[in-house]
Amino acid sequence: MRIFGRILYALMAVGFFLLAFTYSKDLMMTKYLEDVFGESLIDEDSEFSKYYYFYTSIPNYHKDDPIISIESNGYEIMGYEVLRVYIDDNDELVSEESIYLIVYSDTEDLSQVGYLILENSTSDATIGIALQRFKTLNIINGINDNGTIYVVKETFLEGNYDKIYLVGQLENTLVEEDFNVEETDFNIKTFIEDFYSENNRLPTIDDLSGLTENNIFPNKPHVATDYAHIFYIAMGIYFVIIIFMTYVIYFRRKRKKY
Image 1 (cartoon, one colour):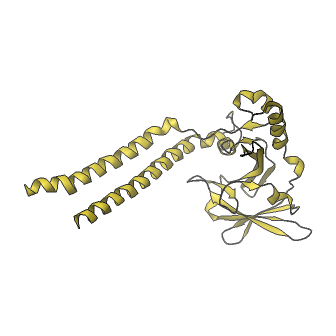
Image 2 (image 1 turned 30 degrees about the vertical axis):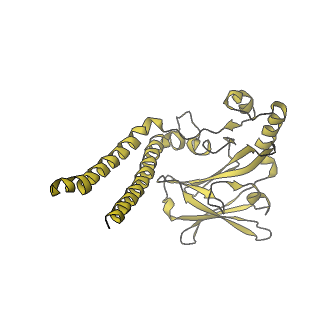
Image 3 (image 1 turned 90 degrees about the vertical axis):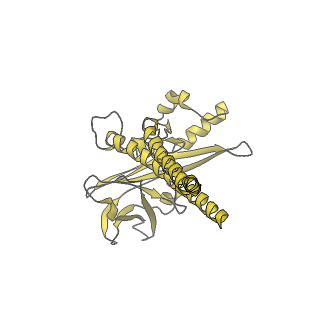
């Protein structure tokens, strides 16, 4: 019975460790994003473009001018071209073209937003795109069927869609606008493949001048090292609690017996 209790206690300690670790990381990132959020969204005097801290963090290359740009009824729907690339087992370059979708409003409650619908007004064909809130911030991302933020370009191209709807949780239409996405809107892939053919490597930050001439930029992951103290404090509190509990449950009880 004593062994079972120790095993149970160890499992609980591990479980709480994972919860504390995840929570403290999320807390650190949330604080970081809250502090920089205005710089990329609502500060018109900022050197950064809108949504800078969001679309630039998506691997591996992006363009900072959106393919989709809609402002209607207090909502903004933006779509940025992103390209993920990697070298496969056959040393071949694999490229995946996607649109990173953002829905934002500084006046409306985004918790009431449901999903996006693309429609071909000629054939009445439609396709839905799920939306997911970005952590605790008032910004929403489009996600694919796998629940990730890469909505492949074929989603927009294959149906020749020309209307977009933002639908609320109550199935009410929040935004209805014409839009257009064409194959010619996507050109990062061609540049990256040409660069790879010529140099036998992928472009990096050192090749920035060549990239920016084509309005192409490498990704910039979220870096919240200035807020690492939040993580360390939260984890420190966890270890203090777990050490205290271990002492009270096991060592202090043993002392009382003697």
